Amino acid sequence: MRSVNSILIWLALTKVALATELGFDKIGDLDMTSGRPVVIAQVAGETVGVVLDTSASEAVLLEGFAKKKGLLMPGRTPEDGGLFLSAGKDIPVVLGKHEFRLQEVMVLSDQGRYDIKNAGLVLNPNAINCQHCLIVLDYIGRVFALANSTDIKAVEQALSEPYGKLVRASAEMHVLENNAALYMSSVSLGAGVTSVLLDTGSNYTTFLKVAIPNQVRMAGKSLIRMKDARMTVHETEPVSIRVNQTEIAKTAVRVEPASSFAHYYVTYGNFAYFPHQGSIGMDVLRNCILAIEPKKTVHLLCRKVADRRTSVS
Image (tube, rainbow, N blue to C red; front, side):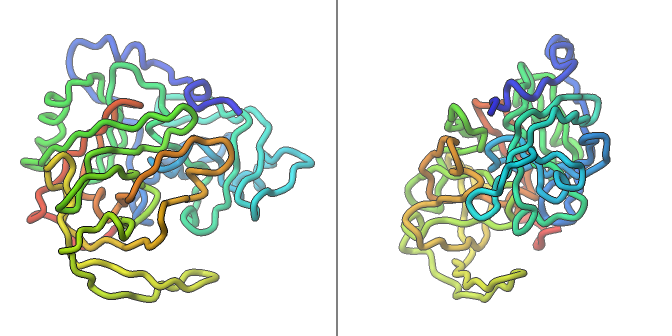
């Protein structure tokens, strides 16, 4: 399977990089109805939603859409419980003013985390081959864009203007050879630091129990009903989440008792995996703007905790 960097052939990005004034190339509006960011695109000639998931290993098709369009490779059978199938056609994708093609990409089940109406494709923005620019996911204003500069101070000034003062936290990424999933360092819950996965494909923030300081109190547990199962979820009382000492949120976090995270969408097949002790979901990130310098640095421009909204929308 080709890497995403070779698959995503973005047009006009060299022109963007040569611009002398700060500007933004708007890719599309973000639909946040499901709590996860979705942008409209043309995939294989059909208008569908593209889930922008920073935890995904690469670009993948969703099973229902792939079957509908006849994009599954003939004779191939589902592997590992039907989570992955192979697609073998050259699939055109038009996103905003940009066009690229997918070849030999994976197909994921559209049940569970990707059970989103009209969604057909999952794309990790960190996989976009964007040189000398920042990928902007503005969850406050609900816009997906490219900034023609990596000067975060200039970009921050331009992005903050409609919203007032935002706090900025920046962290280096852990870059993996065969996985665009956005692992970020220097995150703490009040004591110590750890690495986390930025997970815009989830509505919830989760940490391993071992990463939660002893002084953080548990708020109890609740029963979550899903389509085919029930799950007991333990949560903390609201706790400060900091990136390089800058507070980006104060919220309850779900507690994962396992010794390590092993989500199938990160670890399946030959994809590299980075050990981490938490994942930050859209319950936190919906109040932030992500400015991503692919495979290098992630900047979070977030509303102050006192100005936060109280529900996922």
